Length: 448
Image (cartoon, rainbow, N blue to C red; front, side, top):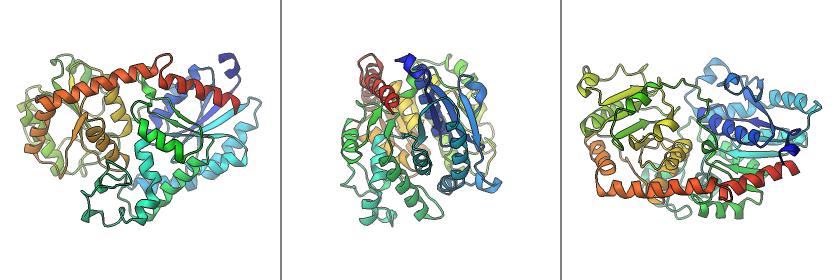
């Protein structure tokens, strides 16, 4: 089959956010290993470093974002702008790439970049979609019209704990919304994503059948297109080098000195932000837990602060080496380290999946969109973590860390997490669900 793919090129277009770039480039690596040639189309905003991927071609297009637009904290406004401003430059880029002698098999674009559907259609180029989140959260997005109609998305504060019978086990507070200056913009973005995904030539998931079987069954009923759950992507190859922030490797040598299953790893991803008060409660909760901790505090995590200047005087000295703080960590390597006993996470899909793959229980602190859905599944479906709810308070943090790290409840979570880790390993082996799905995807692309 590899000989057939050698003359075929696949175009990839990732959404320019860290949590979306990583899985797209991982998928590109997977398909390149099957013999396809790869071209990455990317915006100038948050562009990946081509030197990390010398085996790929890179095509940069203008995103037309002003400095103010590119630095906005309103993620939904940013994504909506990208869907408008990238259309013409993408069309010009596609015209140039398709005029060459090398045949292009298809485009694989991020689901959020829904404008690519119409452009690809104008060239009669098959467009497959990569949805970088989980299947369960996508079903919640697809249900937005019903949720709007039934009033779940408005006046949420009055009914946060109420169950949503259309999407068990979600509560109103678990629905994947995000604060934006114009909520209608969010609904339009989701509508475009869902509609153009349904109209695509196929849908690829960074997930695996054994993890989200009921959600996949529901999806296949509602989306009559080929569906390929081929994840977890990062397990096909060693950790990728697509991070937009340099890794601090000192955390690995620090972990090497810690006892097995003793460390709480804390990281809230590349976008989430917390207040100064929340930061201090987390700091004291970690200190009072008496457990060693590795804490990723990226610049910009604390609103109004550059980095860790808000820490109380003498805090790090008081810990006497029990805490290690870095700006960014090689997360896959950290989670695979035997010293790590729990992961305090924002529950982005990549982080959730990476934790599952290493059998590490989670302390969940979701911030927005699909993170709330992921956290609910971690705690109430897979039962491999607990969720911090109703605000951050140091005593509560200390109690919840003890529940996961020391008590019987935490040991049971660890057992279930290890069981899921075994399922990950099986799904990737010859004849496993993801392995078979990947073979089907390769055959399908060759037939496009």
